[in-house]
Length: 325
Image (cartoon, rainbow, N blue to C red; front, top):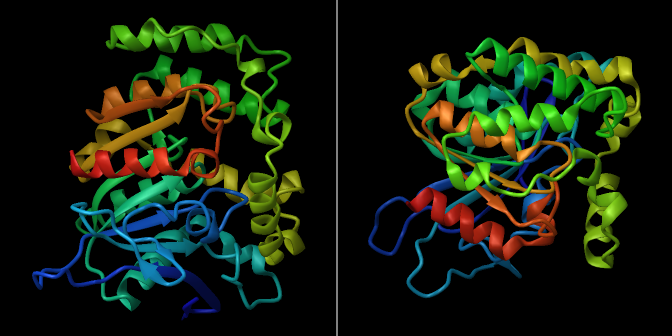
């Protein structure tokens, strides 16, 4: 696993595929960005069916399918991307995300890439596409809308209220009419098919650690979590005061849809399981509409908030379709 240095941080990433195709042309690049609790192995260990992923070090594209060069990054503090400082939490600020991504791309000699982002990684993807749009060809948002805001004040207030209540109550909403909020958002969709989907109460959209007990998936999650030594040492995810270094920037640095679109004209595609408890599909569908992007849902039971763990083949097939449509 390559490690490069940027300042006082060692950045870990995994790359696979051929940079040059058989006809001599450069291969298109996809960079995968993990969410909170993950690292480069979030994608590497669970999406091996993607064309340019590897099995025992060999690229295995299916016959006739387009080949890609893929990069999976561990953002600073996650995985083996360690920060060498007496107070590493000071160097976890969002201002480092885009330069870190660019440092990896430059080390790989990659000028432009599509970004596939999961959960909190969506914030990194949005910041990157907005800051350096010339380096990003497309944005695929998997179970995330983080970093994006609605221009409509009512819609933005509903989004803000929902996310605040979710964070404070661990997605159980004891003092908030989450179902009513989602019904209001759903009513604003122009897609009749999506408006007609059965309503799933937010309290029934349980997270995977409560709903899933498959040995393979649980082992993967345990192993990935064990790799995040520095995050665990800092107590970033367990200490509410420290956690704000991750959560506050999403609100402060978020970009509204029209402003984002004025800077980034590439494809934006959202994909979300219908039973995702962390990021309701309704908000993603409406954001896709406001951005002039596209949206697709996964059926309940295909992966809650981590579709790449539970249904990797289907996830990869849809990522491919989104990028090639």
